[in-house]
Length: 191
Image (tube, rainbow, N blue to C red):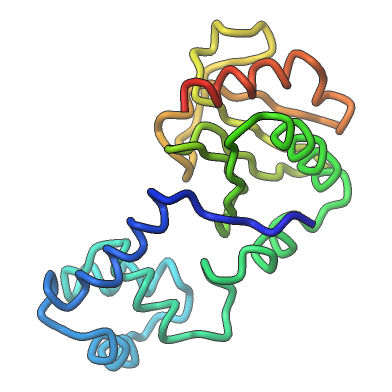
């Protein structure tokens, strides 16, 4: 398993979210954790929506507060745990590992992990992938769909970056072939 890192830009962004919480909201992290204790919701998405609807807290600050309130849960500081939790299906995991191998061949690529997808960045995110049912995976790339006959335009809004405009469904590790490697490298050049 590869330890997931953050780009310098991502590190600065997280530090800014943390540093600006009190200045932008008028409350410290500790005060927000106390506010969250009054939330009737138990799911993290519902808690974030409650913080926004009832207290005007944006999604980034809400996520920071929620992760601080539940330090035992999987969060940004446990990328390996997030990866294991997301990629449970053996078939999907072999596809991820195949993409990780092609990513390792491209200079300057930093792997990152989110709760709902794995991503790759240089200065910005240029690729992301999430598991699909039946041992498949969906790879999104920062490319025009016309860049490869294997790519198509995304038909649903994904939780990853809106810059990833081309997608490909991968049904096995063997489908991560030379064409996918070329598309991945091309997306990396753009990112």
